[in-house]
Length: 469
Image (cartoon, rainbow, N blue to C red):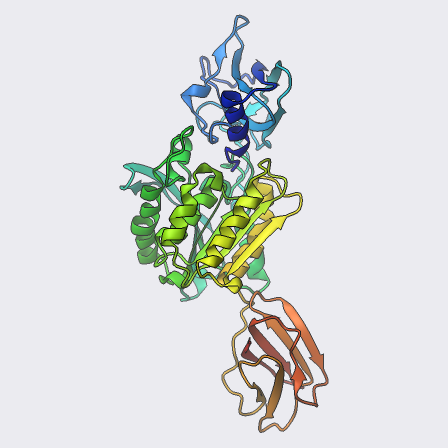
């Protein structure tokens, strides 16, 4: 979802700085005949946390009986859509299918005329669902006792879940509306299910994903552990406690999961990135795989002092990313500052990945592109390759670990491998050796880390786990 970063910047300028300011009036000049009589129409966007029924952003009728709203003076660009109070009743095409966000660049005061073509819940079928068959609504109203609310919960099960007895790692993700289904999304979907199914088809062992819908008008409160003088917030501690103390125990008792922290991750973007960071620090015994996309560290400086005082790096792997074209000049420096703080607090360089995406913007399209890489790295996914149990026939490589050279101990077959592949923990082929009859072989150019050595003989393939020091 879009963060409040851009709006925060221009609204701050509006209140506290001088310079050119401009208002904009959005006026709906046409809407479909299916629109209910006396319907209340709202605008939701990057300026109000994408709250679909925010009373402060209700359109009112002008003298020509047209719904309109004037936004506060500002600068820069915003994204938005119109709703009838919920994301189920968001605007769409004339057939009720999904449309991208509207955008507006502030100028010197103007009126912007809008035509609404259709509503997703009323015109046609409301758009076709894009959720894969292995995505399910676990509950429409799962209780959140910490917040005295309920919430829709999604669950993605790996394609082989129903045909195996395997237990799986679990990734918890925020903004569930935007993860699996374009029909429920309000700014595009991450395509989490398509991405994981594609990885599965490539041979990767993929995790269960639990998607938690955001709370609409409560999103800012729930995704922020600390208050902001302008935007409020501060219910993030309760929201995170809900995931750790209520939702996770339910998932672990009703699905085949690996329950330990080493097998449990949490991921989100924007304010969802901020609350994922908080979960990493507040619940190290629960979450160790942390996906922090385009984090809204701007919301409160307390995130830095809190991290300094409480962060435990023992088992954490943190994937941090943002684009260099996200509309906030501080986002990249803030992320890099936080990455430095984490490493200074003891997080090893091999357990943190920091990525600045050239041209990357603050939207689902950008986060979708990075998701597969992030989940492979966080969970160290491999393409179903395991170490072969018996090396007595074929032989084995030694010493293990090694920093520079590898030797080969010939087995009872009395032959050397014809071909050797070094495969990274992500499943990527790193280095190949052919016609290996002379040892030792040099591995100087391999980076430190875990590998699988895949050795090929005339009729046999073996796998050996290997650590490069």
